[in-house]
Length: 165
Image (cartoon, rainbow, N blue to C red):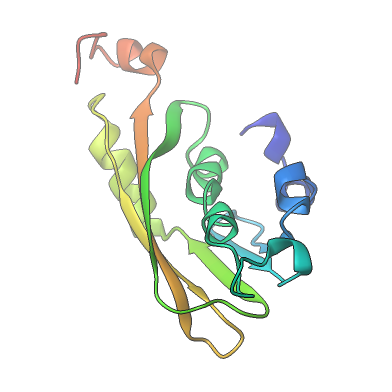
């Protein structure tokens, strides 16, 4: 487990104090003790509104940027390379008020990642989540692709060698 994320409470506090989040009104509302669920909110403020008086699209995406990958680190452990591979956001309706994004990893999804990467292969799970407003309406849909692969030292110790794709 990364030294930054020894506990869910520390994970939540550190990310809520992350300067880009402070500057956009984004905060981490909840992190489950097992790191499998994270809830992020953004309140509408004068400094995160666009020219139309709604949430700035960049802030909507920013609230979703790192979480799936960051959650995987404590869930999978230090033997894995994990990073965001790609993303796409589809704006569905103007966002007003407080918006929420919920990130989740299930046991089945984690087992699939472990299985698909066991031979040294990379795996790029795709996740889709909705950013919702206070009424539960979808403001934006975010598609994320995460890169996951065992670290080279683990692949080599498994006899898979550096040439494994």
